[in-house]
Length: 307
Image 1 (cartoon, rainbow, N blue to C red):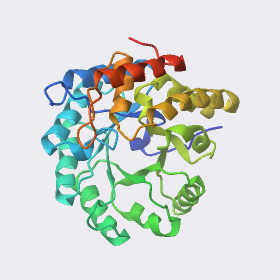
Image 2 (cartoon, helix red, strand yellow; image 1 turned 90 degrees about the horizontal axis):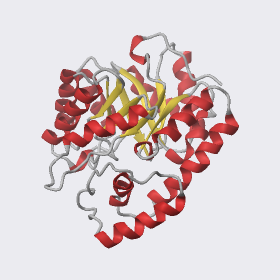
Image 3 (cartoon, rainbow, N blue to C red; image 1 turned 90 degrees about the vertical axis):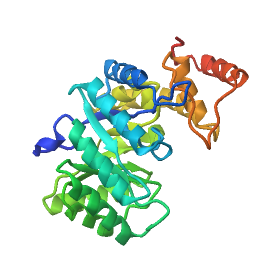
């Protein structure tokens, strides 16, 4: 089974697995820049082709603009052209998103991405204006971040008339709707790339031949080799092998998302020796007792290697 093929240069090297990178937080509450470099090396050595920065997993809306810029700069320095970088620039204020997009272009990021408007302007018309301003701000290709939102092909195809909008990160389960959207784009002679955002359903998304080119997710930080292998095996037509890797990965996903406190997700990184600190409030850091109890449950999985 082959992933979609493209002729435009902005799509070169994009196919595969991307970690939605955690933003590591140091004990003093600042961004842990040294850990960003370690996360990059961990991902690349285990088959990832890129990183999605300051999105939901990366606490984008819990960071200041300066902190978001710092994460993007340090990641660009660490990657040094060895992988693709997508900077999520979504903000409550569109002008802030424009500022982050221009900064991303300045420091060498490959793509920019954004969620639709948050809190204010939650209509298609407002989203169109939001994306238009961001996509016009740079010459970088732009990736829509559709999270928990319905994809309506006859409506959403209009986004792709905007300059530089070339793809979508789709964190949903209506793969049929995405397939219909991509078909309409192909019929109009437009190239666009799609990535699946549901970690636990990557193999399902990749079963939609010629639609998805890979996946972007949280668990890719913790077990990057699994998701790199799911992509590789799916692309090579090894559905059984891909499903086997997905089944094992989903045991990690199930434990990771069990608590409403996202600090448990980062606790898995501490377990493998890449301590990213806690999530910021409104989440709470784990006590030593909570972490110790959680580590025993990770041990029981027999999948993660304890540092």
